Image (cartoon, rainbow, N blue to C red):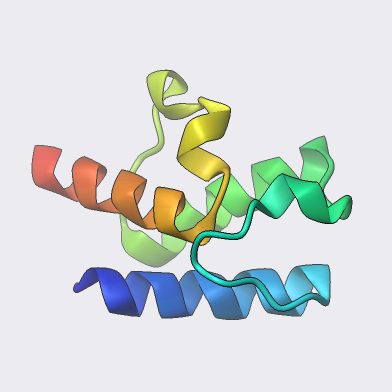
Amino acid sequence: MPTDHVQDTLERFLTDRLKVALAADDLIYESGRVNSLFAMQLVLFIEKEFGIAVDSDDLDMKNFESIAAIARLVARRRART
């Protein structure tokens, strides 16, 4: 699955949930609409939607700071399988 598709899917999910449009490099947590419960929902969505497992080593804020960062995480996790 190309990165563009991953980014588009993430953008739709985040826009729907946060009710704010985000560009690929916008910092998600600066929107002020994200809490720890949403962060866990995001991780679960990523795992289910992209068929990967997010390990505890992946739970670094830098991996989730933007749509582009999450897409890179998805690409790295897929490369490991």
